[in-house]
Length: 52
Image (cartoon, rainbow, N blue to C red; front, side):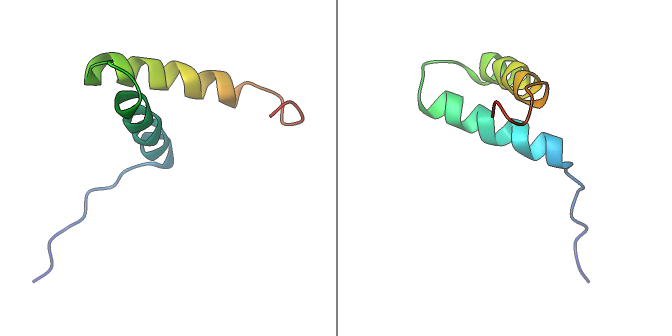
């Protein structure tokens, strides 16, 4: 019998990626890194494509 794999959205995967980068390269805790990761992705998502 196979074990079910929980669904993780693309957005959540992106947040986790940024959060891991922030915690690995700073002294931020998990909670602070998560909040900052969400702000970073929000800023990137609202930036025009030609600026990125």
